[in-house]
Length: 176
Image 1 (tube, helix red, strand yellow):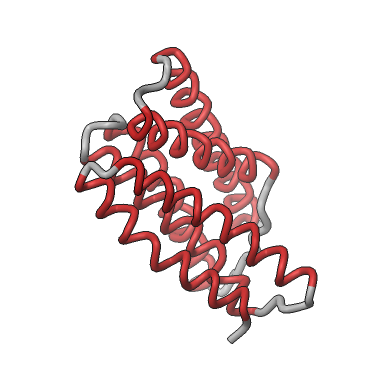
Image 2: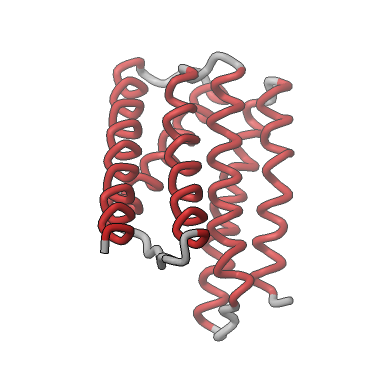
């Protein structure tokens, strides 16, 4: 168990905490936990690379912690009426589709290695930024509606583009 893995596990444990804070309407706390999770993600990655502490466990835990945090926040924000439900569905569906495709390819003895695509990295950045905007807006008194609308459109567009790109890669892999 490396220090980066312990930091990642701590980030995973922040997921239910941030959801509880959203549910209780403690927006400042939810925003602070979200920021702490982001900082911990940067720190564990830095430590792992700087001191050669990368591990197979960390390679699985880190993206799991990131996805657990984002999916949970999007679902919690939708449940509490801060985000349209369909946006949370799009975000969750993309991740379920990717995992299901990978599992199906393994079941069919055609395992597929997945590397993050540029559109996927942009998607993750947009999802993080939009979640921060919504949490910060609720914590500190509202963001301009146009900014929220633009953030929503960019996030949904990149999420759909990312889902489509992974679907095309998977279909090509399965057809080969």
